[in-house]
Structures are given as C-alpha cells and as structure tokens.
Image (cartoon, rainbow, N blue to C red; front, side, top):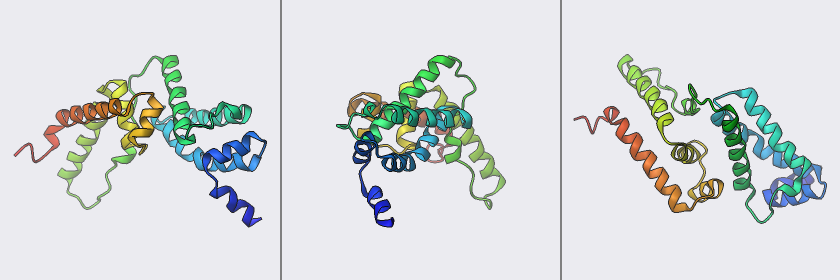
Length: 196
C-alpha cells in the first residue's frame, strides 16, 4: 500500500491528470492534495479575503476537472493552466460584482507586525506604511496589480505569469517595473535613505 501511494507522489501534475482522465481516482486525489491549499490562498487574496467565496471557487475549480478531465490541455504545464483558469474565474466574478471599492489585496498577511520588542514609534511607522502600501496597491491599474501580486504574493515566475495573463514575458516585466516604480514613488516618505 505504501509503495502505491509513493508512486502517485512521484508523478508529475501532468501525468496525474492523464491518469485521472482515464478514471484513476487516486490520481485526482493527489492533484487535489497538491493544489487545493495554494488555490485557496489565491482565491482568498483575489476575492477580498472572503473565505466562503474562496472555498466555493476551489470547489468549482475541482468540480470542473472531475466533470471534464479533458478540459486540461496535456501539452501545457498544469500549474500555469490551473492559475490561468483560477484567474479567469476571478475576472468573471469581478464583472459580476462591478463594485470593487473597499477591497483589500490580501497582502496584509504578508506584512503583519512581528517584532513585539520594537518601540511604539516603529510600530506606528510600520502600521502607517502597511496601510498606505495596501491603499496604494489598490490604486494601481488592474493589469499592474495583477502581475505584482502573482509575483510577490503567489511567488510565480515571470514565465508562469506571462502564460497566465496571456502576455509576453517582456510585457510582464514592464508591468512589474511600472508597479514597483509607482509604489516606490508613492511610498518614498517611508524610505529613510531618500529622506536624509
């Protein structure tokens, strides 16, 4: 039994999807094991930290794979394909919602205050920076915010992002450069080097 389980873990995502398309339920279970957590995090960040909505989206994503395993193009990398589908699901939801005010980017989890020993002034400064950072992220154009979050929150590579947003790697780099430059400019008051 242990040997069989190990063999599934050693298979690539793409091989698992091929096995799943032939009716292998354990192959699907392994794909679910690998991707349900990361996709939950992705949907949480994209769907305004709404856990219920994120859980629904994860469910819908895997339901699509169960109903139509052929939906996955086996010539592509599963990871980039999965994030492309997830990204499109979010875009469709945005179109339905239309109201995108008072959203949070989800980046607050990555910029929480951790040093209990820091003095009050530092905590206030960090808190001000965090809030301004989150506010300024929301002022970025969607195409710039999208690649910035995929790169620095999801940890995806330039190549993977390019495939997901269906743009060239050069375009992705340009959008990242613009987003970083814009945020640096907007938040320069928090940079002690620039304020000497």
